[in-house]
Image 1 (cartoon, one colour):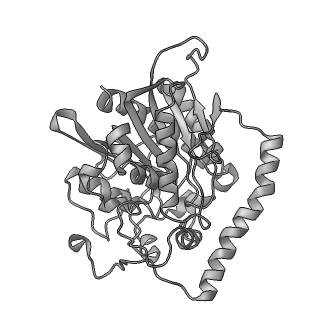
Image 2 (cartoon, one colour; image 1 turned 90 degrees about the vertical axis):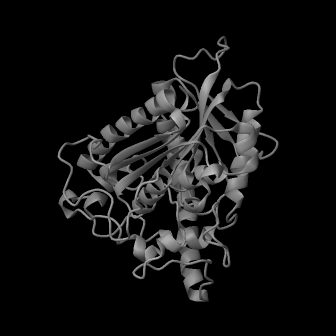
Image 3 (cartoon, one colour; image 1 turned 120 degrees about the horizontal axis):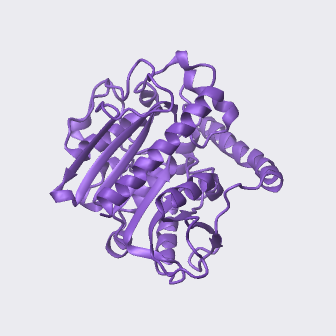
Length: 378
């Protein structure tokens, strides 16, 4: 960590034990969200069922309480086709405490059909009842069970693991486990606005991004980071006191390169306190200069065109291919969007942000799938 130390940034080695009142505050925050979410989700599921339901829902003996959701391409004949499909395992977000596999139904269904792949949405137990590293080992059990399930048309030579937010962290975490590396052998991880470094203080992370009041109303123009109020409760819930914050399973930034899949695609969002860490990790693995703590991913001004990604500026996009194509690292920053923009309620974002975000979601999904086909699985 010596090359990363800066006097202006607070870095911690161990998760601290908090005073009782601070613990009570964080517990109240998390359990309030959990309890209030129950009737809300019941109402939504009953009156507004998913418009993009999975083709299959399965459980396995290793984790019978964690159903997974499976999406086939629209063109795939479930009853008659024997074609094996490239497979992407996806992991939902929610700060390691909230969220459900259903949250990604639309993304998973569209990605499956857009790129003719099998998408398997994984599940895991949540903090604070089940703190780190429970989720990582739940995911390991489910990946192995699905991988060994002969009823699924998984092309075992073409596998990737991806996730959103906490799921981005967990995709990098579970892919390091020996059982996954040696048996499943995922060729790639798709880490989408994930948290990769828990050693940097939350107070410092919010300083490492641009703020754009010109994008008001809605979250994009807020002077406060969307995650700032929730992150302390999420981190307290997921990480027990005394845990090594630099553990690569918790902070994948510190994972040895050889313990990660050969191909890595990091996606960040410009208006997000997590983007700087992802940018640093992508740069580090690509052998590029690691951004300093005062560097900010993206640009101070607004993007010039609605719905478009910026691919000709290395602050927003770069790729490093090594060993004749056997390894690669790619970085993509979605401009003028907040963390989780493609999963948040539309009323939080505003009409302009939703329109812009939907176009950018489709654009980055296409880039991801094309990269898998043309670079990873060629």
